[in-house]
Amino acid sequence: MNRPLALLAVLFTLPGLVACDAKPAPPAPAQKPAAPGTVIQYDCIPNYANWGGVTEAYWKRTGVRVPPDMKGSSAAMAALDAEKDHPQADCAYYSGGIGFQAAKKGLHQPYKPAGWDKIPASLKDPEGLWWTVHTAHIAILVNTPALKGRPVPKSFADLLKPDYKGMVVYDDPRVMGTAFTFVYGVNAVLGGGADMKAGFDYLQKLDPNVLKYAKENVYNDFTRGEIPIWINADGNGLKAKYVDHAPVEVVIPEEGTITMPLVMGMAKGAPHPEAARKYLDWLLSDEAQKLMAESFFQPVLGVDLPAEFLAKFPPRSAYAKAIDLPLGDMAENGNAVKKRWESILSGR
Image 1: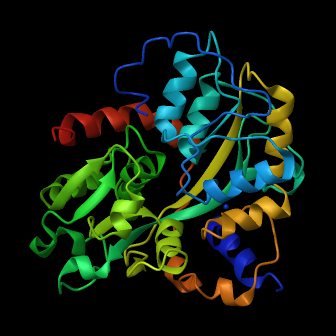
Image 2: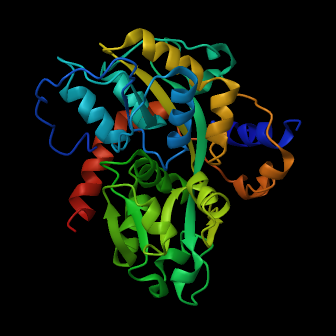
């Protein structure tokens, strides 16, 4: 069984996984240190993977605040890089390829949190420079009333149809890690090679149907129907449907999908190292893993989840063509892919 299906199998068999390459940001001015009882996590968007609920639960348990932070993965990496001489953040959350890249740039310090040994070897750095907290898959999220009678698209190919002109949104991959995973990974889903021609040909064909390349979190816009189709993580669509009761369908594309590990790293020079270590330990606890699962992001560790909750996920068969991309390759090629996307598609 390949790793994406193995991770899904864990879920379904339990009783009861910005722009760093736009122009580099100038060094940030020195800031006042965070208040005592605070841990600073870059990329801590409340509506993504239930970070709002996770951090609220941690505050209630410990009295330690983890404030919201609206940076995407690439923006978080860029900020850590800009601030490396006067660190402001304690840790950061990323899509896997960006987290790997940030570690390779020397922006993390090693730490192996409690529960480390239970994380599959392929989902962590052996030195503790990054590790997975949960996983997701790229999906087509559809606000059905916003389609105004058009059929729900079932594939990446469907999104090219003129019916969907001005209806599709995906985030700017120079800013958001989920979008980078899509932009990088769609090439493999479509059978492309190392030149990534298949992927970029597709993205160019999709461009006329794109409403915008969002540089900010657009979850609320999507649930309100201002965005009919959003290419994003399956968990965000399932949360919209089952938690926020929006009229949403989550489509795993017929061509296949991309498995996306989402990872943490402890920032080099973290200003609150002991508090950060305790927080990172807690993120792998059953309590935190279940809170993340409430937003339909798949826990990296085995935790008990109710059968009625698991039944809300798409069937395992929908993920049969999930592709597991090497994070090292994503990190190695990340800058080039973002620059190529920028040269072709960032003109609006």
